[in-house]
Image (tube, rainbow, N blue to C red; front, side, top):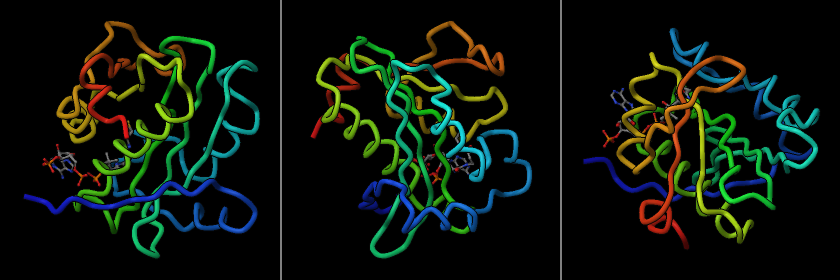
Amino acid sequence: MKPWRAVVLEPIDKRNYRALFRMQLKPGQESFVTPPRWTLARCYVRLFGESFEHLPHLICADTRIVGYVTTACDPNSADDYWIDDIMIDAANQGQGYGRAAVCATVAMILARYPRCRGVQLTCFRDNRNAEALYRSLGFEPTGGVDSEFGEPNYILRAGALDRLRK
Ligand SMILES: CC(C)(COP(=O)(O)OP(=O)(O)OC[C@H]1O[C@@H](n2cnc3c(N)ncnc32)[C@H](O)[C@@H]1OP(=O)(O)O)[C@@H](O)C(=O)NCCC(=O)NCCS
């Protein structure tokens, strides 16, 4: 049983953005997530559309930076609240930070967007570890695929969503 990890999401700004470029994936994970150096660009160009708020955050544990997460959310929608990219640095994977970071991200979305009734993400079919994590938290396949990669979308809603409300 892994320990529960306390993580904090820090908005990415000019003081801390360089940490993104030091993050590494494990071999074979390169196609699962947008590389750190690209993830800010997706936010900058508002890839999901002008009605979406795009927010990049570093995932911090104690004084260390262990990963990053980006969200794209339409505050006027019921369930267009997306975790766009999430990554835990290779050296810190498998220690509970990913689970804590997904929970913290969903809690942040629920606190920030009162209309949110569903949080969505895309998980590549080959990304079995991430799929196991999402399913264990209650994410379910929507039956749809993402328009960019053709990979399956998942949604967290109802009781499973409310459990992560702070
Ligand atoms: C997917 C990712 C975010 C998970 O973060 P993590 O810190 O490694 O995961 P955790 O230690 O919190 O484990 C959470 C769950 O993930 C699954 N998991 C993680 N690593 C695993 C491994 N090596 N083998 C099997 N399952 C694994 C398990 O279900 C685990 O639950 P458990 O602790 O009850 O066994 C991280 O591995 C990562 O950044 N991977 C590369 C980028 C990526 O795939 N991002 C997601 C895009 S959808």
